[in-house]
Image 1 (tube, rainbow, N blue to C red):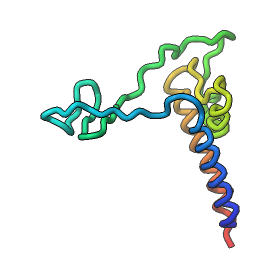
Image 2 (cartoon, helix red, strand yellow):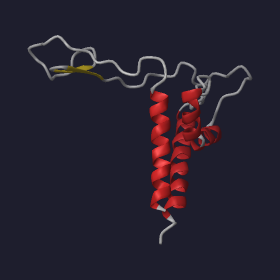
Image 3 (cartoon, rainbow, N blue to C red):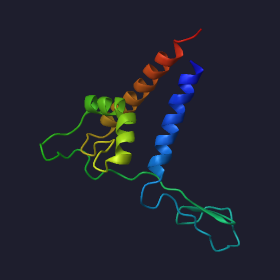
Image 4 (spheres, rainbow, N blue to C red):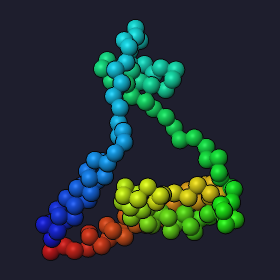
Length: 136
């Protein structure tokens, strides 16, 4: 049982590492200019520590919220729940197929977000119940 969990975790780790080897910039290290107040947040939402610059940003508003897609449809709580349940699968697919997205931007706002988070939680609860029930 422990061997199968190890193989599962190792295979997921290898897929993530393989996806990280794709083209494009994954991260960037900025060397900040020393300031007299190093370590305090700068006005441009950066934390400057000697040798490291950390960018801190909050998500912005969705300009497509409460607008319809090409088919005249706005995703609601039930579609958010479904997208949350399949989120781990779509995350893995999005590494290999750039047109696959995890989140529907044409949604109705907080209700879709609630459904999405409940779907992700439901996925991990079911996964935990499945793997947690196999004790010897």
